[in-house]
Structures are given as C-alpha cells and as structure tokens.
Image (cartoon, rainbow, N blue to C red):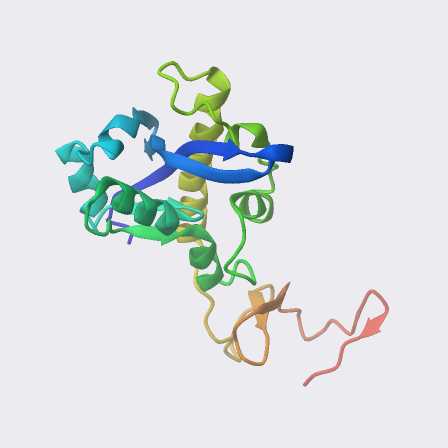
Length: 215
C-alpha cells in the first residue's frame, strides 16, 4: 500500500436529545473532514446529502478504491454517507484498529482512536466529547472548537497510519536471530499478542532474580 495515496476522513452530524439528555436520534451527515498530507478540507455537505446530490468530484473520491481512507470506524461513516446520499457503496476504507492488529501492535481490533494514540504514539488525545454529541453541526459558521474537534481526528489518523504502515510484520524467529531481536509472543491460536520482548544473549542466566535456562 506504500504507493497508494492515503487520506484521513471523518464525518459529523447533529445528535438529538430527549428527556434527561437521552439521545433519541441524529440528523443527516452535516460536515466532512478530509486530510491529505498537510492539508485538511472542511466540507459542509448537509444540503447536498439531503438533496442526494453530492458534488461529482467528492463522489469520485469516495468511490476510488485506490485512495485509502483511514480513521477508526471509517467504514461505518462511508456506509452511512452512501446510504444518506443515495449513492452506491463507497470504497477504500481501512479500519485503523484492524490494521494495527494485523501488524501485531495491539491485541484487539476494536481499539478507539484514543487507545491507538496512547499505545502507538504514547500521547494523550484530548477531545471535547461535548462536540461529538452536539446539535450545532448544521450551523453555517462552525466554531473553532468544532473545526478542531474533527481536524485533530483526521490528522492523528494519518500519523497513526504512517506509524503502523512503517512497522515490520513479525516473522517466525530463526535459530540464527541475533541477540536483541525484538519478538512478539502470541497466544496459542495466534490471534492475540501476549507480550513483546527481545532475545537475550545465551550468556544471560538471570533477569530480575529469575533464572534463565535454555529451552
């Protein structure tokens, strides 16, 4: 996938609340963010979605399977947008959590963007969750908080993709592997990562008071 263009995408829509602030529904997708390299586009598309007349260039972009589109939950967003806009299924979605699991960087394919940021980038993704359940995404003039909310997501998604894609996929350890080789220990069914470690020199006989014996 190294030779394919990669974009981070995200979509937001109004959330409607009932008594006791209980979520009772949501409106059509109102805003879409597309990040590519160092640029982030903000597209206010609610009227196009409601009239089922997305701009042709946007449709071409969303249908193009050779443009990778990343974020956590990307396929949900693509399916929702296609359904609401009356379009055929959009292509090119790559779930970041599944991608990370395939590279044995995490154990479960259901990790959130916040989880991936903490584990892979060792950073805290601070977000105002109030924006996520906002009923103001239809406003013509978005606030700086709204603009930043999703812009951070699509930017971090690109950073995570590059981090995951640049990591090497583990291979079976050979008898000639040098000391210090990083290893991933998998569960018996090879589905989960149990631990990360390194190969110790055969001369090492004890680690933290634990005796090391050849096996």
